Amino acid sequence: MIGKTLRERVVVPVVGALAALLMFVGLGVVAAAPASAARSDCPSGYACTWNNGSFSGGMSSFQYSIPDFGAWPGYNNAATSVTSAGQSASCVAEYYPDANYGHWTGGTITRMRLQPGQYRSDLSNNVYYRSNPEDGVVQVSRTWNDLISSGRFVC
Ligand SMILES: [Ca+2]
Image 1 (tube, rainbow, N blue to C red):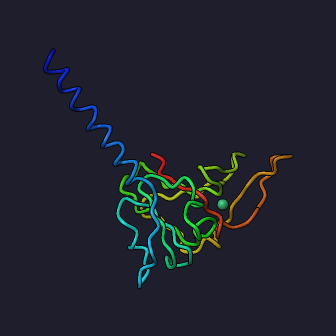
Image 2: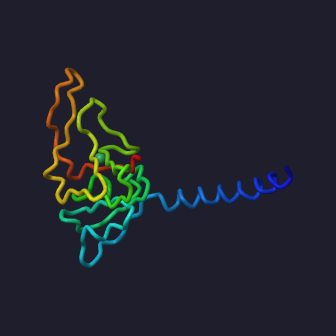
């Protein structure tokens, strides 16, 4: 009984530190554009965006989530190509038009969902749908280009 108590005293601070570390590494980062941009620049286990098409320009990446691209000047509403380098088939990378994973909830396609290995080289070719709030009719609103404001893995 004493041994268990001692173990709990040791384990709790370690778990707390680990959780803090995971929070830190899990937040998104923005990287300078590499000399030769490529989809393979997205680290394994991460989801990435680029501000230009064909995986070029400023790159963002996250292992768990980016709740608000507005935290990085020049990255909010700026992504033109995206990929998921996720390693778990049960985890889908999702990108949203609003901060804090906000999106239209009218039952239509209002999230960009990417299975591991999936990508979009030019979001100008991907239509963002939403429903008319008055009658629920699906309307073509615009494309996903320069629309993304948050993203996360949903497992
Ligand atoms: Ca947006």
